[in-house]
Length: 610
Image (tube, rainbow, N blue to C red; front, side):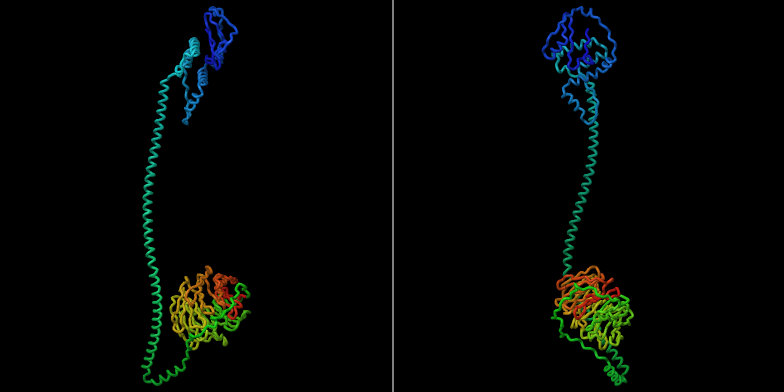
């Protein structure tokens, strides 16, 4: 009986060969046999003959239990599994590791091979002698090559296979259920998206239909709007013609009414004094002889001496503020130059007007008598009279030599804004807030003509140089030209978007400059009756304007407390004169040679610029 130990489990360790025992004259070759199996060649170092009775002479001793050995025997199964794993080809090991690549950690028991199964069974039941015999015969058959590869496979375990298949079936069923849940969720999501798609598609179609409908409507409205333009133009022309006819009818009506009133007075007077007819006629003759004479209307065949004259443009870019004079207690609304001497007259909101010598700024004369603010002042062409307009509805004529008021005109029913003398001095024209302008005879001091046509306050009035044409600027956004003798409107200029504050002629009388409350200045050519230049000065109103002698430079009194100058011939901005602390109300060039510029402001001062 021989006990062969191979490693811990009783089988040969790696690189070891089993020792063979033979009975009945058999020979044992220990190390030589192992060498022969390894290298296929061997050398016999010693030969020993064992007889059948050798076992009887050999004394066997019982070995004590070794704790280490017991531990090794308990770990036999693990060691066998490890040795089997090391003996398997690397491909099978790799396949074993790849089997768990499903992303879950699994604990698997490696199946046992045939020989390990028998060994474990014999060790479990303590059949040591059977184990020794099994190992001897097993290795002899294995070395002799009598085993087939199919006979050395793992132990067939139908239960294990069924259990594994059952787990796989359970796992696949779980995955199928999850897939069904995912498919159900996906189907619900798909149905939801399909409904939203159908809704948005329907909404898109409706929007496209509405858009097409709006496009059709816009085209139809555009065609309809294009038809309005000629209609509006025709209506505008008809309106202008109707307004002119209306004014003519009104004038004729007023003329006929005055004649009727005169005839009625005469008739009543004749009936009352029928007995004293001779005395009444004699008295009437006396009254007629005492009635002051009326000035004749100016002739139209006069020529403008400045029509062909050529003057050098004022050098406003070199002007600097030289002096400032505080002469009033209120805002200075207007100023005017004396026609022959260096004297300036100013009108103020404090109810007074004053005359100042230039350029010293000494007070020459002060006029008090209006009950409200004074809006304008104008010199008679001969310089002997001064006309002033006021918010007390009156126009006063002042005698400069006698330093007193000569006459007061009360024909207007509301505040009077402006006044101007004719160049011959026989007529004075005034403009009022009552939407009318009037012409007064300076000999009879009576109203000779009333200009009606504006639908808002008439803010400014002046004469065209050396003619019978009156120019007015109104709050109804228009500028109009009137015939002094007939009182009819000759021409109306449209284009301003806000109330016109002032309109003036140049010296030649062929250009009009009008300014409004939006800061817009328009230049009109009187010969072709059209606008040829527009100047935008900003968001502040333009209160006044003045041409120099040449008519090339235009100075503007702006509401931003500055004086803006433009070269209208070159159409460029020249200079911005700043020095006042409040809105500039009026501006004027020195009339004889443009030597200096005078400006009046709401800060109660007027300044000279040289």
